Length: 174
Ligand SMILES: O=P(O)(O)OC[C@H]1O[C@H](OP(=O)(O)OP(=O)(O)O)[C@H](O)[C@@H]1O
Ligand code: HPA
Ligand SMILES: [Mg+2]
Image 1: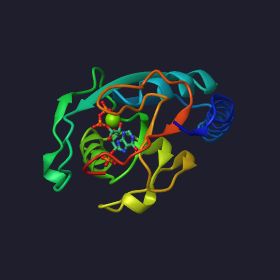
Image 2 (image 1 turned 60 degrees about the vertical axis):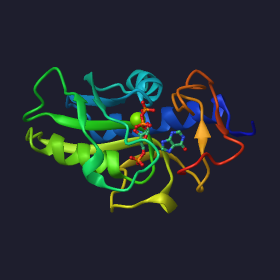
Image 3 (image 1 turned 30 degrees about the vertical axis):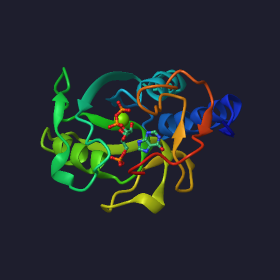
Image 4 (image 1 turned 180 degrees about the horizontal axis):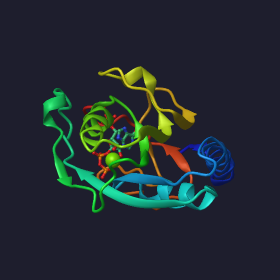
């Protein structure tokens, strides 16, 4: 599988985003909310590149499989463990693709009344967007190709690959 971004390129971008977040939230505390399972590895690296006070939590949403037709299909499986009311929150994702997952989560997190809410994603695939949503922080913009590695899977495989690779044949539904 062809390498799209090497682990060195990823590390460099994660460091840069971590630095930017640390500067923008200087003197404040932030809560990072990772979206299981894909975001786990990016969150682990991002949290360690942020120098301001931070905690993290995780949510899990139901995968809407290959159909990906309706935003109504996204469902919360695991909610945050700790309240975020009045806190500065950043949702952390591995990839922003159709936007259905993040637009659902964004609305849900806003109901908890955070002081602020932003989105950090490792990858942004803007051509695939079905709903209007943008990331505040993104390591890389990518074309409409299916990718694996650095937390991202194809049928649950390849999450532990430490660079980001193009999956050879676009799987059905993508
Ligand atoms: O913008 P979207 O089209 O909603 O796609 C992006 C979401 O899809 C993937 O998660 P998935 O639901 O496959 O579960 P996973 O994180 O466990 O791999 C990815 O990790 C994002 O969370
Ligand atoms: O390109 C992708 N790879 C892995 N998981 C994904 N979820 C949405 N897009 C992708
Ligand atoms: Mg995910």
